[in-house]
Amino acid sequence: MRTVVLNLPENVDLDERQTVRFLAAKLYESGKLSLGHAAELAGLSKVAFAEILSDFNVSLFNYPASEIIQDAAAI
Image 1 (cartoon, helix red, strand yellow):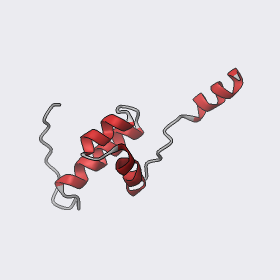
Image 2: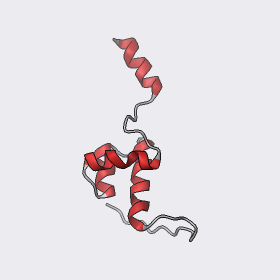
Image 3: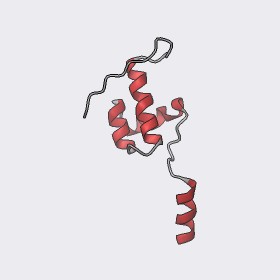
């Protein structure tokens, strides 16, 4: 893994652990990381990571509606 240094404004009310988990959740939401990789980044098991996603308004089911429609049409 790479190391990234991030300077946050003082008014951002997140500690280091919360910041890493937020970033992992948002990278998962955007499709940049799989659930497993995002959980690893967050320092959690897949199950524990899945449980905290809602804390960051991220759905566990990260599947675009357009792909659901395509899959349904293929069936």
